[in-house]
Image (cartoon, rainbow, N blue to C red; front, side, top):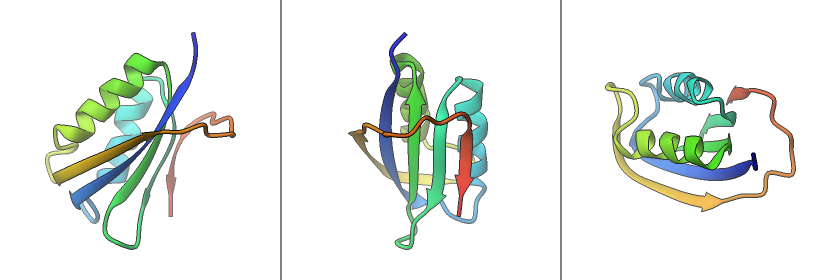
Length: 93
Protein backbone atom coordinates (compact mmCIF):
# COMPACT_ATOMS: atom_id res chain seq x y z
CA UNK A 1 0.00 0.00 0.00
CA UNK A 2 1.49 3.33 -1.02
CA UNK A 3 1.29 6.38 1.20
CA UNK A 4 0.15 9.72 -0.08
CA UNK A 5 0.22 13.09 1.69
CA UNK A 6 -2.02 16.07 1.09
CA UNK A 7 -1.94 19.45 2.79
CA UNK A 8 -5.26 21.24 3.22
CA UNK A 9 -5.97 24.81 4.17
CA UNK A 10 -9.42 25.13 5.70
CA UNK A 11 -11.10 28.55 5.79
CA UNK A 12 -14.17 29.72 7.66
CA UNK A 13 -15.03 29.62 11.35
CA UNK A 14 -12.52 26.90 12.13
CA UNK A 15 -10.61 28.22 15.15
CA UNK A 16 -11.94 28.16 18.69
CA UNK A 17 -14.53 25.50 17.86
CA UNK A 18 -12.58 22.26 18.51
CA UNK A 19 -11.74 21.87 14.82
CA UNK A 20 -8.20 20.53 15.26
CA UNK A 21 -9.30 17.98 17.86
CA UNK A 22 -12.23 16.76 15.78
CA UNK A 23 -9.95 16.54 12.74
CA UNK A 24 -7.44 14.48 14.74
CA UNK A 25 -10.16 12.11 15.91
CA UNK A 26 -11.46 11.71 12.33
CA UNK A 27 -7.95 11.21 10.92
CA UNK A 28 -7.06 8.58 13.51
CA UNK A 29 -10.30 6.71 12.83
CA UNK A 30 -9.19 6.55 9.17
CA UNK A 31 -5.69 5.36 10.07
CA UNK A 32 -4.01 8.59 8.94
CA UNK A 33 -1.00 10.43 10.30
CA UNK A 34 0.04 14.08 10.03
CA UNK A 35 -1.08 17.18 11.89
CA UNK A 36 -3.61 19.99 12.25
CA UNK A 37 -2.56 23.49 13.27
CA UNK A 38 -4.06 26.95 13.51
CA UNK A 39 -2.61 29.62 11.24
CA UNK A 40 -2.35 33.34 11.97
CA UNK A 41 -4.92 34.22 9.28
CA UNK A 42 -7.66 32.29 11.12
CA UNK A 43 -7.48 29.18 8.94
CA UNK A 44 -6.41 25.66 9.86
CA UNK A 45 -3.70 23.72 8.04
CA UNK A 46 -4.12 19.95 7.91
CA UNK A 47 -1.49 17.51 6.65
CA UNK A 48 -2.95 14.05 6.06
CA UNK A 49 -0.77 11.06 5.17
CA UNK A 50 -1.89 7.52 4.53
CA UNK A 51 -3.73 5.42 1.99
CA UNK A 52 -5.13 7.51 -0.87
CA UNK A 53 -8.74 6.47 -0.23
CA UNK A 54 -8.57 7.39 3.46
CA UNK A 55 -6.91 10.75 2.72
CA UNK A 56 -9.72 11.43 0.23
CA UNK A 57 -12.29 10.55 2.91
CA UNK A 58 -10.76 13.03 5.34
CA UNK A 59 -10.73 15.73 2.66
CA UNK A 60 -14.38 14.98 1.97
CA UNK A 61 -15.16 15.32 5.68
CA UNK A 62 -13.33 18.67 5.78
CA UNK A 63 -15.20 19.93 2.70
CA UNK A 64 -18.51 18.78 4.16
CA UNK A 65 -17.93 21.12 7.11
CA UNK A 66 -15.91 19.14 9.64
CA UNK A 67 -17.32 19.19 13.17
CA UNK A 68 -20.83 20.58 13.68
CA UNK A 69 -19.49 23.59 15.64
CA UNK A 70 -17.45 24.80 12.64
CA UNK A 71 -18.38 26.60 9.43
CA UNK A 72 -16.17 25.69 6.49
CA UNK A 73 -16.22 28.19 3.62
CA UNK A 74 -13.39 26.77 1.51
CA UNK A 75 -10.83 23.97 1.48
CA UNK A 76 -7.71 24.27 -0.68
CA UNK A 77 -5.65 21.10 -1.17
CA UNK A 78 -2.20 20.38 -2.52
CA UNK A 79 -0.33 17.07 -2.84
CA UNK A 80 2.73 17.11 -0.64
CA UNK A 81 5.82 15.00 -0.23
CA UNK A 82 6.17 15.25 3.53
CA UNK A 83 9.82 14.14 3.77
CA UNK A 84 8.92 13.09 7.30
CA UNK A 85 7.55 9.84 8.64
CA UNK A 86 4.54 10.60 10.78
CA UNK A 87 3.65 8.00 13.39
CA UNK A 88 0.59 9.79 14.75
CA UNK A 89 -1.78 12.62 13.97
CA UNK A 90 -0.65 15.63 16.00
CA UNK A 91 -2.26 18.84 17.17
CA UNK A 92 0.26 21.59 16.52
CA UNK A 93 0.37 25.00 18.14
